Length: 313
Length: 124
Length: 203
Image 1: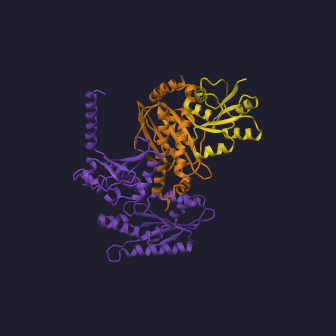
Image 2: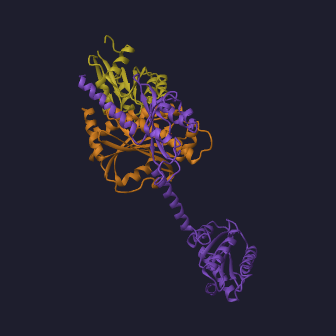
Image 3: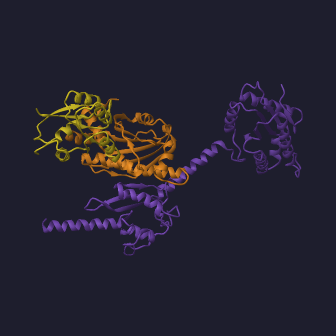
C-alpha cells in the first residue's frame, strides 16, 4: 500500500469513528464477560456515564437495574451460535432506562427501545464480542399505544350506552339471540318509565339523565349473568337468566318499587311500568319472546301504569 | 474396469455441483439418480460402488436408502452429502452404515479429503 | 399463476437446493438452542401473486390461531421479507425446551417467538446470502400479531408488487408438538437480480 493509500484508509477510519460517535443510535460493544469495550456519545448523553468511566466495566455493575438474566438469555445465543438477535419494545419497553430527554415533544417518561445484538468475530472467527445497537422508538411506541387505546374505546362505544354504562340495544339483541339459541330458560323484562316526557318538561335534562343513570346502576346490581341493557330512550331490557315467572315477577316488583322511591323527596311522581315474559316451550323465536314482553308491558300501561304485568296468552 | 460412482440427489443443480466437485484425475464412471427409489435401483444394477447420497428427497429419502442397503446387504460405500448438518443427523446416518458425512454445499476440497481419508481414491 | 413467468425450472431447482442448505444451517442452530432434533422437509418454491398472499399463508399451517413475526432484509439491490408463523399450540412445548419458567403469558410467548425468529430467520437468509455471495442486512422485526386469525394477519393493499418468489419451509421438532412455517418472499425486481446470480452458479 502506498503512503497516500495508507493515509486515506486512516482518514476513512477516522471519519467512521466520528460518525459512530455522533450517530443518533446507541452503540455498545461488550466482551465475553459483558465488560464494556465501546460506548458512544448517544449512550453517554442518555445515561450520563462517560466512555472513560464505562470502558472495562461490567455492564451489570454499571447498570444494576438492567435485567441480567433476560439480557443474557438474548446475548448468549449471539456468542454461541453467531446469530443476530433482535428485541422489540413490545417485549420489554427498554433495555436501558433512559429518562425522557425532550421536555416539549417527549410524550413518555422514558425512552422505548428496540435493540439489535450482533456478534463480532475475531480473527479466529470466534464471536468473542458483541455489539448492542439501541434505537429510540419512543414516538412509534407511543403512537401505537395511542391507537390501540383508541380502538379499545371505539369497540367499547360500539356495545355500551354511554349514559348508563349498560349494554346498548344492538349489542343486547345479539346477546338475546345467543341466549335464545342456547336453549336456556328464563324471563325477559322490559321496563318503561311512565310519563317521562312530562318529567322531561318539568325537570332539567341533567336531572332526567340522573334518573336514567340511577336506574342503570340499579339494574347493574342484578349481576352480570342477568344481561341488562338500555333498550332506548327511557326503556330498559333485562334477560333474567334461568329465572321462572314467579321469581322474575318478584324481581320486577322490587325494581318497580325502587324506581318509585326515586321520586320520594320530589314533588313529581317517578314511576315505571314493567312487562315480563317467560320463555315457554313453544316460544318460536327470540323476537317473538321480546314481543311477548312488549305485550305484557303494554298491558301494564293500559291497566294504569306503575305496575308489573306477566305475559299470558 | 473403472469404479461406478452414483450421485443421488433430487436437485439437478446439486447433482451437477457434486459431479463437478469430484477430483478430475479420478477415473470413474459417474451415474445419477433423482430420488431414493431410483438410487436403490441403480445400486442394484451395480452403478453404485460409491454413492454420494442426499438425505431430503421425495419418494424415498436418504435414510430409506441406507436402510435398504443394509437390509438387502447391497454392495455400496455411502457418503452422505446433506444440508442437514445437525449432529443428530450425522449420528443417525453413521449408525445406518454411512461411511462419511459431507456438509453441503459441497466443494472439491471437501470431496477430495473425504475420498482420500477413507482410501476410496488411492494415489491422489 | 405460472412459475415460468419469472423463474425457469433450472432456476427453481437451484433456489430449492440453496434453500435446502440454508434451512439446514438454520435448523442446526435451532437444534442447538432447543437441544432437540429439527425435522427438515423439502422446501416449496413457488411464484405467487399479490392477491394470493393470504391464500398462500392460509395453506401454510393447519392451525387457524397463529402468531407471527416479519423481518425485512436487503443487500446488493436485492430485498425481501421473511415471516415466521407459529401455530399457537406450539408455545407450551417451546417454553419447556427453551427452559422458560413461569406462566405462559402473552408476553412470555412473544419472547419465545422473537428468540426463535432471530435464530431461524437470521440463519436462513444469511445461509442463502453466503451461497450467492450477498451480504444481507436485516431490518428490525415486526410482530404481525399474536393469537390472531390467519386471515387477519396480512392486510391487503397495493404495496407495489404483483408477483413474488415465495420460499416456504415447514419446520417441525421431533417428538414434540412444535410446528412453524418460515416464508421468504422476494419481489419481482429482486428475483431478476437473484436470477442473475443463480444463472452464474448454474453455468
